[in-house]
Image (cartoon, rainbow, N blue to C red; front, side):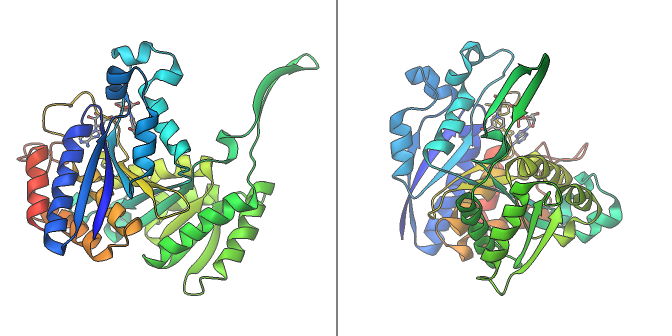
Length: 360
Ligand code: NAD
């Protein structure tokens, strides 16, 4: 089949790492008889340089007309780059927020998987790391506390700040359905994380998610309070498959889950809307400190491409092939500089792309 992929390489290491993911996708196309057509689009700093704004209408339209978006990362050195002398709405990051909003990307997925070969980088106790873990943090991205009404004012002579946390049943239902759909492609377990002992919004999450769970009898469904989840992630992360949660809890817990995998260069992510459309990108930033040196780790972007195949195109076999190729190169001992132990030999960014493509 033919798929149209919008490619937003972005700034810093973005072009280097996306080029490697495209190389791997082209190999998948060759092997499995698909066609991936890439449409290169600008966003972030490179768009500011070309058009004076971080996100153009053309990029939004072209991205929206594609089957999925593969992104690198945007932004520069926030202390020295002239992009950060602009007002906040004109800076590179405004492009990312803008495209998420324009394309209604409400569900953020961040897998946290511990590769046995990299378990030395895991900061957890040996006995915990030994068991490994493989979970999908699923965070609501467009509602809740970060989008509610907020103000600071003096009330009866006392300065008071108010932030509002609100969710409606539609916002909860659409992400709960996504969560259960994704669990069906994995180990068929969903844990809803909330604070239902205190918050009304959490109680509505429980009610709606429980209703949705009835349509997925094969999926084991459970609930957990957020404070307990923060502890369980470091005590026994192997218990989790899909962790479904609202925006702020997800913001915090997904960073905790990333941290226990030990390496930012290995972490893919996806942001999905109600259709099969999604934007796929590595969790890390544009790493201006190593940009242009061909030493960045492209694996997070390559794994983001695998997520795109699985969740937007339903190409599970092809996604497995990429993930297995990554496992294989790690098993064979190849490391980019960020993964290497002291004294260990390293491969460059483009070599890592070649090695993975060759194992598809
Ligand atoms: P960063 O993730 O870019 O870098 C943090 C550290 O991790 C650096 O030492 C970097 O070299 C390293 N690193 C990151 N990705 C790597 C990779 N693939 N391989 C090897 N090492 C890697 O975070 P930062 O320095 O805080 O931010 C730099 C810029 O990126 C800023 O402009 C920031 O706003 C932007 N940013 C963009 C996104 C995005 O595009 N989604 C996300 C986060 C940060």
